[in-house]
Amino acid sequence: MIVVTGATGNVGRPLTQALTAAGEQVTAVSRHAAALPDGVRHVMADLAEPAGLTPALDGAKALFLLLSGDLHAPGARPADIIGLAKDSGVRRIVLLSSQGVATRPVGPSRVAMRALEDALRVSGLDWAVLRPGGFASNALAWAESVRTQGEVAAPFGDVGVPVVDPADIAEVAAACLLDARHTGGVYELTGPEVITPRQQAEAIAAALGSPVRFHELTRDEAKAAMTQFVPAELADDTLDIISAPNPAELRISPDVERVLGRAPRPFNGWVARHIAAFR
Image 1: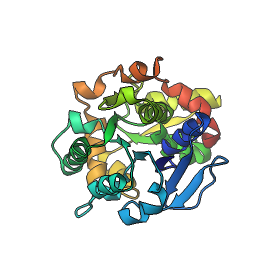
Image 2: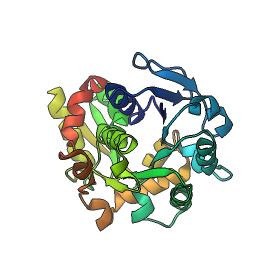
Image 3: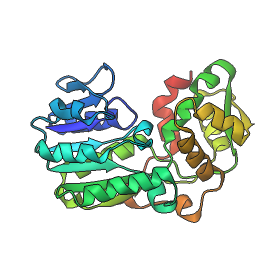
Image 4: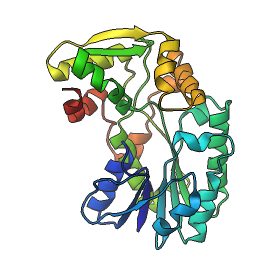
C-alpha cells in the first residue's frame, strides 16, 4: 500500500493514476470527498492534525508527502507526520519540497522546508526529495478570465522561468516510491525551456485558436490576488522569484530526464492536455 497525500491536486491525482497503473494499492488522502480511480481507497484527513492520518497509514509501505501552505505557518509541526509514518510501519517517504530550499535558502518558509528535509534524512527511513520550480498548472488561475474575457492578467510579463508540468513531477514521484535506486536522491524538477507569462498566454491562444490579451499586473495587484489562496509570506516568496529569478532558478535541470529517460514536457504540451479549462 502506498499513501498519497494531496491526492486530488495537480500532482497527487496523476501520481495516484500512475501508481494504480503500475499495479500498486493506493490510499488517497485529501481534505474533502473526491472522485478517484476504481480500487483506490480514500481517507479524508487534514495534515495539520497528523493523528488523523493514522487510518490512512495502516498497512502502508510508502508515503508521498505534499504539504499545503498552512503547514508552513508558525506553530505547525509537519515533522510529526514523519514520526507518525515511521511508527505506523512506513518504510519510504518521498517529500515534495521546493526549488527555493536550494536557490533562496533564507526565509521562514524555506527554512521550515529545509528543516523538514533534514528531519526526513535522519528519520531512519528510505527517502527521496523532489524540488520543483514553478508549476505549469499555475496557469489555471487564468482559466476563468480567459473563458470570460479572453485575457491573461499576470505580473512581470516578460520575465520567464522553466515551469514544470505536474505530470512530470508525478512520474518522478512514482519512480522514487517504487524504485530503491532513488533512495537518498534529491531531484530538482523543471521544464525544458524558460517561458514568460506573455509567452504562456500566447501558447493558450494558439491552442484555443483565438486571441488572448495579456494584461500586466503590478506586484501589489498580483499579491492581493494571490493572498486569497496562500499566506502573504508565500505570495511574497513567489513574487520575488518570478520578478527576478536568479541563475539557479533559470537553469534547466537534467533531473526529469535522468529519472524518466525522456525530456520534460513543454508548457504547450500541458496546455494541449488542459485546454478544456480555458474554453
